[in-house]
Image 1 (cartoon, rainbow, N blue to C red):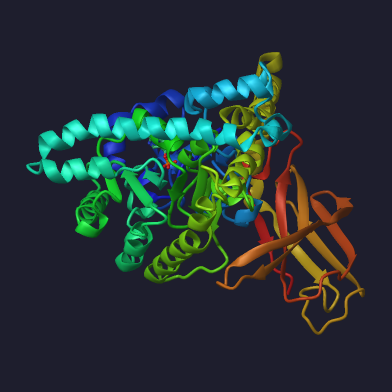
Image 2: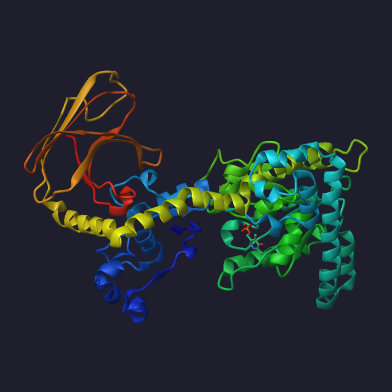
Length: 547
Ligand SMILES: *Cc1c(COP(=O)(O)O)cnc(C)c1O
């Protein structure tokens, strides 16, 4: 199984043939294949001189493939479509398992204690069930708040002691440092942002309109503070520029102590931060966040997510359990999209998040806020644990692959040998197959809005299979053009083999038009074998036009 982890091009390696030859020149000989066959496994177009792609090579040598969230599974299908010509992206076998995080590592000790006490001693075994987490709804709001607030205080103390010393040591300005440290307010709405500073993560988004941001962080009645942290790849100048930009903003007088950048982001700081803030913010460029995991860590600590509907949050978001930047409107122009998304964040903060957080009604906490925390722990957290992820891998891939492997290897690899021999002879004879004739009733070739549905149509295909002995699947495929002019798969219907005479075969379909609308139609012929795991495993395809 090949698990693809990102749609970002920098995450996919490509190598020149020459370089590959220097290090892997001996490999084809060991496998008993030619250099050309070997290098073709890493090319979308085997006869080209494209660079060798590790991802294409993985796809061609793996039985199964998956993305790391529902949305990323779809994005991967699009991205990998050129590897399997003759199929629509949505037909590909590329599936998905949404990433999850390891609860015993990422939930704070305080929360784990509370879970064990109230969910039951064996709660780790039942951590993927909403029913387990539903018990959070019965706990007093005060208990939830006090648990969270204790962790938040610990974070503030960590920043004061650990960073205080560093900043004092590094800066020539102790006065400013002290005022930042004293300004960190455990009663403020604390919003965290921490991750790799890859440019697609848009760490700069919050700083699109500085005047508006200034009003949000300088409201004396409703204090709001931001903690930023992260590292850029040493070769990513863009990402490093972003860090510099945020540092500069954090030193402006109006943002001093309100926007705080913490250096040396690592797992230890991450675990303090994702548990100690009130909100965890994520603002990637859609649809480039394959999954994201830091927001999942926040979930199991009662920290609410404010995030773009991308990656795991696209499927994880529930109303009343966090906040989402809508995916309804999208602009092709990225700077327009950035402006819209930034405005949405300011609006959400001003109109929903800040008022909810500070609606105290004489208590030290907001009942509405704590209810949102409870909802997020009840309805979201159980679905993003490592345990759920492992369950999915077993259910969707591992068990199936283990059983298939055992079948193929039984009897000294009997089925593997048969299948290999069948593939070899079928590939060799494929081009000797000829279409003798295609006939169809006048209007079977297409459907248009003007036509009535319900009329009986026929399609008849006569083939001369030549040297080909393999069984075939013949199907009528409907497709439609989407708004971008790309063809999309709609449906397929199998034709029946009605006559066989030597190498001559006749396939037929009688059907009623069922869907009004504009569709394109054609016939598709594929080789068929009961031991093929899926069509992409042996992707020979012949398309036949209807007219
Ligand atoms: C969880 C984690 C990440 C991943 O963060 P995303 O926001 O999902 O990109 C990166 N770095 C560290 C140190 C982490 O703990």
